[in-house]
Length: 304
Image (cartoon, rainbow, N blue to C red; front, side):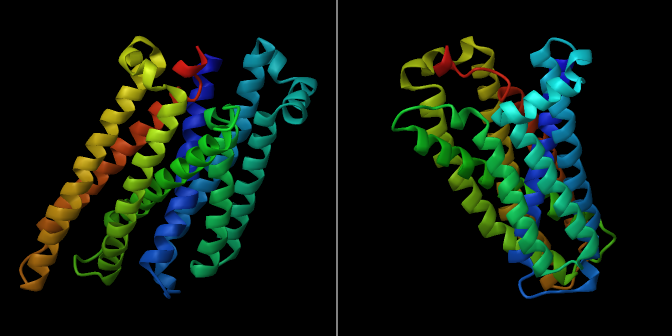
């Protein structure tokens, strides 16, 4: 039960973390030079993301302490929690993650939506995202390849946030009661196209580097014999589905919306199809993060 809670809280941290980094980045490059009160729709999303990271990090601290101590009762003892925070890198990272997220929450509440707020949140999101890699498999590699693996893991996490955080913001934008010719939609879709492509390239390259260290060429044929390998296969399958959905959204549904708007035809159906496509892509991304959360609790084939 406690082990399952560790996975759930890890998943919540990942979800909040990608929004905390990816959504402000998306807003910066999509609404360049715009400080508009109508962008207040971004605030609830960022509030939820910061609260999710802070709550899940502290709850994960208790759950992880309980796993190490042998029971929830032991894990709740101040001495056990104190040891976890001061004596392990994982505990320190969770507390630091929660502190950064709470600082981000204060910024979201105090500052108006705009470039200043988003820039500060990007820095907070970078700290949160990097902390996942710093206490994950990427930090466990020793020897001359250790720095390369850690760097690849951090870039991989950042690229995932660039894609998934932007998707979260785009989904909320499309779900609002807005007209199909709303300029905000066109700015968002145009900005997301290039950033999404860059995110995919970074994910593929860094994913290959990470797989080299975590699986290794000699174990590729045995990848399906371990739970970690099976989850990796599931992750790759979900990634392929996301790519297919993203391609359909970018090269079919988005141009279709642009075409009907250009000729002044009824565009609500085209907008509805695009909305459904983006929501589907986002939901698959949520499932992918759940798989990654489970993988983070398991030893990779290279450690066996």
